[in-house]
Amino acid sequence: NFIQPTVEYKTAMVAMQNLSIYYSPLDPTAFPGSEEVCRSLNLYAAKQWEHNKMDSLLWDAVREACIAGDSYLFFYDSRQHAQIVSNTSLYLADETQRDIQKQRYIIIAERRPIEEVRREARANGIKKEDIDLILSDGDTDTVVSSRNADDSSADDMCTCILHMRRGEDGFIYFTRSVRNVIYQPEQCLKGLRLYPIASFAWLPKKGSARGVGEVVPLIQNQIEVNRLIARRLISAKLNAFAKPVYVENMLENPEDAENVGRAIRIKTGSVPPVNDIFTYVSPAPMSGEAAALQNELISKTQELSGAGDAALGMINPEKASGAAILAVQDQSAIPLNGQIAAYK
Image (tube, rainbow, N blue to C red; front, side, top):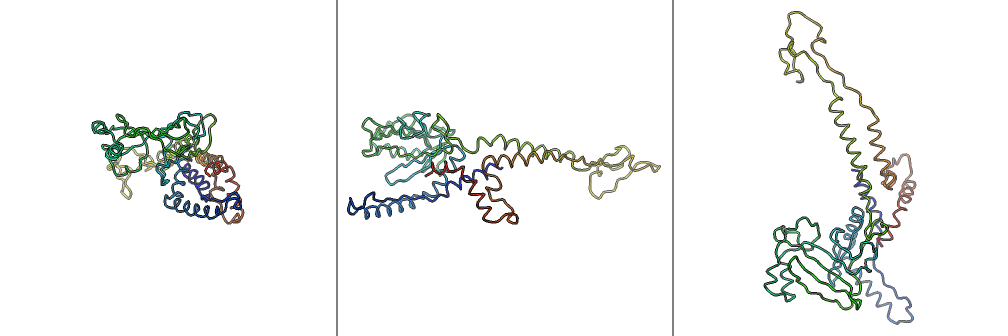
């Protein structure tokens, strides 16, 4: 599996960029006390960053984008708690618009426990007969994320839809529903003018809101390498070992012909040459072309994807200095500057 090291290396090169939120006054003299306000905001931002484990969350978001092409962070409450939303669980009004804030609406699907949804429905004043319609839908094929469904079985889960749209007044309106019931009628959060979603496309695709990851272009090469290995294994099983060849009716114990350390008894009164009755076929030599092709496929694929041995640090330290190895790694990271900028 040469895809995984490629993904892990590129994920690390992007996510290892240390980020933090920092407030500073544009003109401290124009607004007395602004420096103290910014200092308080910086303390609050650092506290929220640590409380929400943003470093770990961002690593997961970068890895998902590197694999799937794009990932999304959804901030779902006023305490800035966030979760990663898979690109297969987020639906856009315009799949050609890359700027997520220019979408007319955004839909997020997730699996949630039925009791949790019913509790929210009661809090929103939904009638009892409508709450009773919140049932398990058995939609286990929909792979979506959930905040509180780690210990729930598929039988007590349902697919919930969160619909967000931008109103004519510029504010964001939210609606939540399941298959049969709208359990949270449309609400507006006054003051919220941006969708609480941050998107990260690994490699932007022209004319598409989605991105291209590192995995899809490498799949065919990985399959071909696996096929070469399988063919080499089959060839080794068939040809790499000597095989006994004997005249069965001339042996008293042919069942011992393949047993180690057992004597072979011959049925004859005369003493013919043993090689005429029992011998071995020598193993056939295996061509080195298959192994060379396999290694070339792996090395060239990794080099062209920017994750060759030099980038991964697999260099003999006896043949290169530490400074040279670091210089090669830094040079290999240059093509990732676009991803690093998008990440920031």
